Length: 154
Image (cartoon, rainbow, N blue to C red; front, top):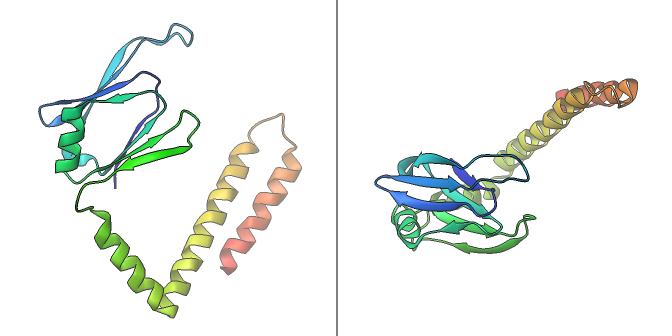
């Protein structure tokens, strides 16, 4: 699933043919110039809008027609609301999740995979943090190594 995140303040998302055009304004404080990004509608499964950005009515209509959910968050990521099409793409995913939940062996296998992935990502984060000379290299390396052992047992 491809998610379009609109994070720049005062951005405008509008429909232009079969694409979404995200217009990002100039920010003199950050020293960034005005720019535009084109995203094919067919590739978008979800849109997440942060802060005071705008999505035009034609863009919303096109997204709903493509069965794409639009989620609105505050500038700090607090959930504000969601616009969902009449028949969401997620219904089939949700049914598969319920079926997996009903099968204890499959649930256990999935849970182990989730935990292993989480631990692996934590280890990667620690190893990347270890590249920062300001951090205690030995403590970070030791924590990453202990996570490596845990991931192998999950």
